Length: 605
Image 1 (tube, rainbow, N blue to C red):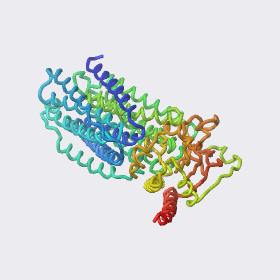
Image 2 (tube, rainbow, N blue to C red):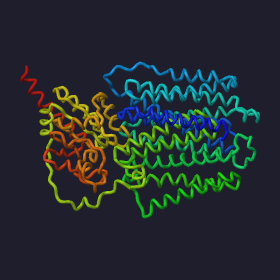
Image 3 (cartoon, helix red, strand yellow):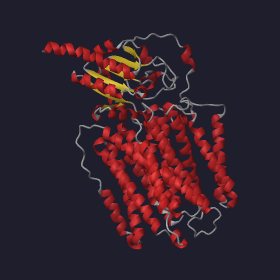
Image 4 (cartoon, helix red, strand yellow):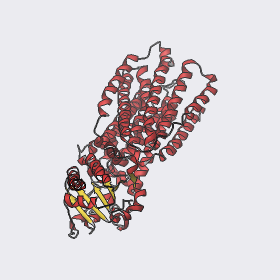
């Protein structure tokens, strides 16, 4: 193994472990902004895209490089802008923590200076810029541990990306391939692609907060596409070259990494697009199944690996049809991988695709010999992996069950269960119960997002707190359609961050809570998860809403949730069903509270 390859692997492993440690310390309540931030960081593939476009060694590489720069820049702009929007919404009563972690970039710069004796001029400046960018990406993730510091995360990430772009453009001015050919970099095309990507990214960042999950999935499409087409350009530049001294020579290791880059890139591209369609409800959100589906997927993947193996062993002109087949199968596999996964499993899918995007960017770094791509990709890959693990643990399910279990089909036995009775109430009775409570825990779910009821929930929060009621929000890790989805919606409605409580922290107090108000949540409050081993959600950690003195559930009907099973909570004697649209019903409760407050104020006068 060459010294440079060993160093690259060493950097990758260190960056991965560093990413794991940093991401584990991010509050679960900030997982949605974290996802958008890492989505923007995964667009570090822009550096490699700029190299391919700037060199413009062939018409094909120039076209593919232009597509990659456009896609990456779209991801950068939309990712950072929407993360900034989200973080500005989080209100914290704690004073901001002083910035103290710039020592890491300073230390890294010093390390480069110490080793910079063999470097000179442009190469030294480029190396330092990449190292500064890598350090700032680390600090960007580090500052996501609390809203008081999270706002610096976007600033650090944006500066890092700007420094990385500047370093890539500067490197092109003294690129050995261009110098040998006596050509100048294609700065004009670079400017056009960057401008078009910026123009496309701005409107994507302005979606409603309820549409953040599908926006994130859509942005992943761009990231995966950029990596896939850059890998394709790298292959066609290197195919048939037999001189090991050539920069484009496809050694066995380089060919393996390139194949991994293309596979993960195109799977991320099409898989994310299917996730976007499901989240936007432009295709069925339930699992799409057919007989022998997993076998077909496995055989398809096996065929793709076989084609890649031929390309790796014999990267000659004869391998071109095999490469095209490999790329096509990768694109198709991304589609078939996601269609059998239900909409409520999208938090895990999005996190996993985010990890794929990061790993593919790292692979690009190995192929291009760029340590910044390796580091930033490893950080993003570890982030997606950690979030996927958190989501799976929150559902008590494995990766294989999420990806291949077709979870979310309506359970056959639900139609034949014995008739159960439930109690319902109107807004007036619900308002009276809430007004008489001392403590209320609101449990939001996907139904709140669909109804866009977060602002009415804020009005309810204000009305109750003015009466001296202690109001908190219990957040389940998988409530909604992406990690931390509920937190962003509540932050948009100006709910103070300190009143959002994680499931593990609130459960120990639920027995002392007067009223648990469930708004649009279903499976995450179903008591059967604790004891019914035949239930598909058995073992899934839930919010213990059933332990509160009184439970009220706002829901359109008695239909089951994503797991396709009845919720025993709805049939308990302590539970009142409040049927209707969440936004409208909460608004009616607020009106009733206002009506009862008016006579009280008149009497006080």
